[in-house]
Image (cartoon, rainbow, N blue to C red; front, side, top):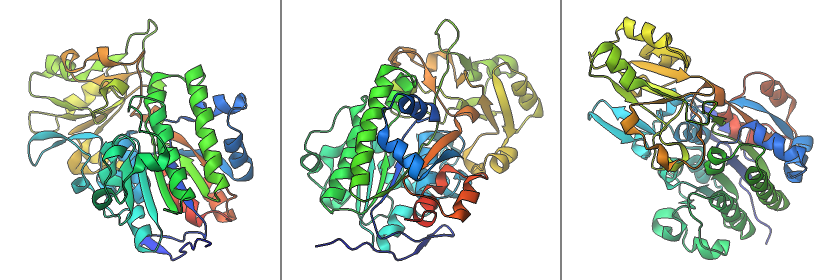
Length: 415
C-alpha cells in the first residue's frame, strides 16, 4: 500500500509549517564546519551531497550562541533562539537552587517542539540522537519515536515509542566515542523510513570525530564519505533532506600543540579576590570530546553586583574577544537573562576558557584540543536536497539561521 503523508499545516512558536507529501528529514550534523564538506567534496567523496548542492541549495547560516550542542539542537527543534526556548548551554548555574546543573531536562525548555506538533498534525515522527543527553529535550511531548544511539538497546515502546532498535538496524549500537555512533543514527533513520515506521525524522549526531580530527585528515574524509552513503539512502527513499550543524569546530592550541587555555576563575580571584564562579556551558558528560573547555563562559560575581571594573578588566585580557553584561548579553546574543552570569565572555578562534587548572583533566582528551562555543564557530552550513522557492532564495541571501532548518525544509522548497 502506498504510504499517505499528512500535509496538514501546524504552527509552533508563531511559525506555521506545511509539510510536503513525502518523507521529511532534518539533520543536525554535529560539529560540521563547512570546511569538512569542502575537504570531502574536493576529493570526490560526497557525490550525494554534491547532487544536493547542485540540484537544491548550499549556503551558510548563523547558529545560536553559545555555539554548543544543547543550545542549538533546542533551537533547531523549536525554530527559535535561546532567549525564547530557555536552553542557554549544556550546563548552567541555577540561581534558584544555588546548584550547578546539567541542562538536559525538558523542565528547562520554555517553547514547544516542532517534532511533537508534527506528530499531532498526523506525521509519523522519529527523533534519533547520538547522545542520550538530548533525547528528553528533543522528544519532549512527542507522541512518536525518540531514542538515542548511545542507549538504543534500552529503548522501550512505552518510554521511547519503539523497541528492538538493534534488530531494526541489524547490529548492536557502537560506543559513544566513535565515528560509528553517528552513522548508526543515520542507519536507524533509514531503517525507519524503509519499514514505513516514520515519515518525519530529526537526526542529531555527535561531534566526536570533529573534536578529534581536522577536516583534511584521513579519518574525517572516511567519515564524511560514509555519511554521504547514508544521505544517498535517504534520498533514494524519496525524502526531502536538509542538513545543518549546531556549531563549527576549531583547533584551540598553541604553536607547540598545548591547549590554549585562559583559566578565568583563577585570574579573576587573583585580581579581585575570592567569590567568583565561572560557568562553562560546554560542560557535559562527554569530557573526552573537549575537557569542558570551550570559547564561551558565564561569570557570576560573588560581590552580588555587576562591578563595571570587572567588565573593563575582562575586556582587556589577551585572548578575550567579547564581554557583555547580563542585559547586553541577553539582548545582543539572544540569551535568557535569568540563566546566564553577571558577565558573558567569548574568546578568540584558537582560545578556550577554563575555570582553574585543577578543574580540568586534560589527560582525557583524544589528541589535540579542538573545540567550539564562541563567535568563530557560529557560522555553519545549510544544504537542502531540493530547489528553493524565490522567496526563500531571498531569505537565504539575508541572515538565515540554522534554526530555520524546518522552515526551509517544509515551506521553502519546490518539492
